[in-house]
Image (cartoon, rainbow, N blue to C red; front, side, top):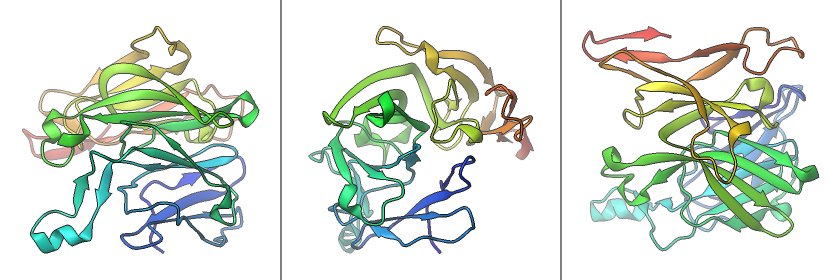
Length: 275
């Protein structure tokens, strides 16, 4: 069974959620696995008009959210001697929001979010009784350089507030730092959290350090919600972090009571270590 590298697990219900991208229609197929480990019927998403680079998605308590960005895949480009992955500057990014227990795509809602292009989604949750979906994502800027000049790309962590009834979006930065690979305590997947952890600086796939973000500090007037950071030693670069709760089975445990772990590569010694 092919699927995304970033499935989501709801610790409260025991369900798992995933999707499968494709270069032919349907370009996106969503599915879930119930608490008994049984895969439920697939939901093909035919309202995605072309193959988009969908690497990650998000879930909330009621919804699954998919990006349809300006980064697209066109296999015909190979016949021209060009890479199949390209940026469509004329395309407007959309976010697709579908009930997470959907049996078909009839409930899919697409909302335009110009200039929002991401590979990963750090977190998502609901507010206002489910009428608002909030996401935190690293927006790749400028997207035109993503494919050939990644050294010029900056990942701007943004808070995206989607008002479902009005179909409007409000956006604001969470930090001006170059942040990617955002994660949360796994027990809070799909639920509102106070903290997000992310990798900072360095290169796209190998980062120079880690940060802790306090989302409660995010306001229209705030410009940096980072409350703690740790840089690796010179010449060392890390990958995607993961939060390990110290007491995962304790519902009374503090959200940030745990350990942030990752693999770090030392380019001088040519070895790796587990942090």
